[in-house]
Amino acid sequence: MKRAVEAWDRFQIPLYITALIAGALVGLQWPGSTGGFEIAINPALMALLYATFLGIPITRIGAALKDLRFLTVLMSVNFIAGPLVAFALSRFIAGDEALLIGFLLVILAPCIDYVIVFAGLARAAQDKLLAATPILMLVQILLIPVFLAVFVGSDTLGSISFGPFVEAFFLLILIPLVAAAGTQQVARKWQVGRTIMAAAEAIMVPLMMLTLFVVIASQVEAVSDQFTDIATVVPLYVAFLMVMIPIGGGMSKLGGLGFKEQRAIVFSGATRNSLVVLPLALSLPAGLEIAAVVVVTQTLVELVGMVVYVRIIPLIFHEKQTCRKLSGIGES
Image 1: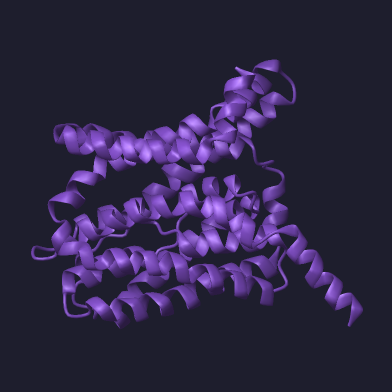
Image 2: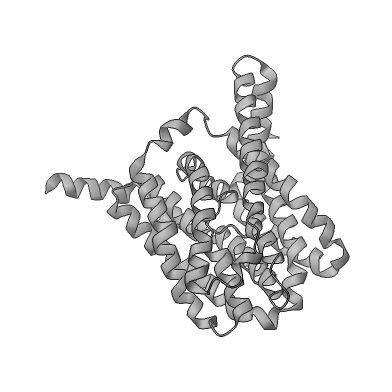
């Protein structure tokens, strides 16, 4: 088992790419299975996040929440810089209301779930991202209607229910977090808790592969059926992923954050809440149905982008870089 775990960790990026390809092939080959895979998304995410939270000392979350410098940069990237980038990119599709609403709905919503997992794979400050999750959730619930009203107009907002945000927070964050905290408490006294934690750490890579497979298999058919209609948003999503690296990194450095915090800010700024806002897109009135497919497309583009991020972000933001900066400050 130890050798298998070492192999998973060593070849995790190729394994994730394999899971993405396999999910696409299965979803396209057996389109009737997409409903079942869609039902499996939340359980897979809950298991993945539970295993992730087990590796984060829950007692550190309170301390992480007190890091006002990190929180200030995080909020600025997600709710000032991010919306400005979103607005600029949305001008390319401003003539198509359905595309525009779908694009803005997903790109304005910072991720609250698997960003923590991907950030952890890149050795980022995932504990601080986890601590900020309730704040990210609350602020986006309050600000997304405002941004949509400013960028699109208030006509369609009355037909959107924001209940899925609350449901996602309880299912994907609160329940796994409470379960992980309970397991950590048990592990302090009994071997069974330590065994569960060790097993969860060992199967992290297979859990991530399963989640990627399920998400892709459930959504790829919807995108392929209308790809010619939504192809214009794909380069916009790619551009967002690319632009948020220098923006997140630059604002993090201006805020004096360490390299792990810089990585966390970049991941948070680039990842979006696609699986949470999808029910919102599905609730839009007649004539805007394609908005849901626009949201799904972002999921597919982002998952591929995150596999790349896990590899390149640690190369861009690293400890030696921070040490050089601190050394320069000391010399001055």
